[in-house]
Image (cartoon, rainbow, N blue to C red; front, top):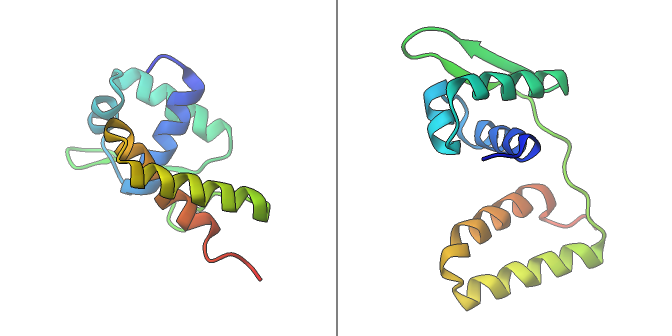
Length: 117
């Protein structure tokens, strides 16, 4: 993963979805070395994202307990377009895009549903 911004967002997503991960796990999932993991975590801390670190054999990195990013906000039309697009992609069975569609659907469900009245 060559782009620093994309890598930073990917690390944040992994920490949000998996809790605590070791440096080796993060490096392996992203195809980068451990030094790059540490630089990326430092970048997240500079952005105000609170990272916890546990040393040792069973240690790893995680987000401070209770930390949540603010939700994504969509207009009603954007939310409808997103929902229809994800349902259509699921119905078409887009093969290789399947995991990305499932991930986007889960993220949209976490932040957007049920819609506010």
